[in-house]
Structures are given as structure tokens and as C-alpha cells.
Image 1 (cartoon, rainbow, N blue to C red):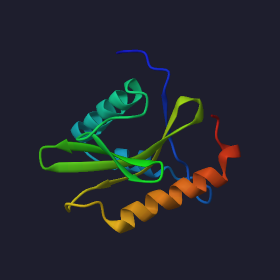
Image 2 (image 1 turned 180 degrees about the vertical axis):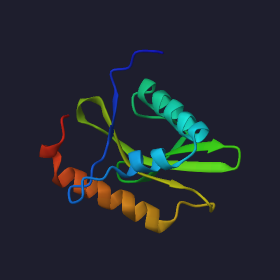
Image 3 (image 1 turned 45 degrees about the vertical axis):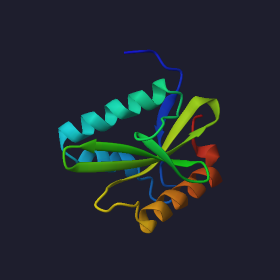
Length: 123
């Protein structure tokens, strides 16, 4: 494994302490989880930025990591933050061509919650 100074951190909801991306990863099958973890390693090695087709811009600072495995299409919304941190905001199983607005809204809400509660994170 190549050493990377970048770190992947899970967003934690300020109200219920849940970590949506970690919860998602624990619910999916092991093969898909390992593939997503491999892509997260690529993301770290690439200093928080991957070009298409692996990643694309969604809105503001939020990007979408695209992990396709057979018929399974997983998406992880994230953004790069100060001190070389990659914050994982939201993950979902993609069923349609475009990212659903409700999934983007969840990522945005998590982003705002994160920004409003920076003091709770070890960055």
C-alpha cells in the first residue's frame, strides 16, 4: 500500500451520533464493501480528487465517488477538507441514471451539519 497523508473520516450526525456512510458499508455484502474501500484508498492516494469516470462534481465542494461492481452501483458523497481530510457524507445504492435529488439533499444536509459542528471533530 502506498502511504498517503490524506485521511478518510466519516461524517457523524450531530443529533443522533450516527455515521451514515459507515452504517451503509456495514449493511452491504463484503465484496462490495471491499471494492468501496479500495476506491477510498485510490481517493486518498489521489489527494482527495479523482477524475471521471471514478468521481464527479455534484454541487459546491461535494463530489460523488462512483463504485460499480457488476450490477451494483454504489455512490459515496464526499468532500476534501483542511489538513488533508476527506469527509464521507452519505452513501447509497444507485438505481437510476442521475443521482436522485433526495440523495443530494441528504449529502448537503450532512455537509452543513458537519460545518456547523466542526468543534466535535479531530481534524
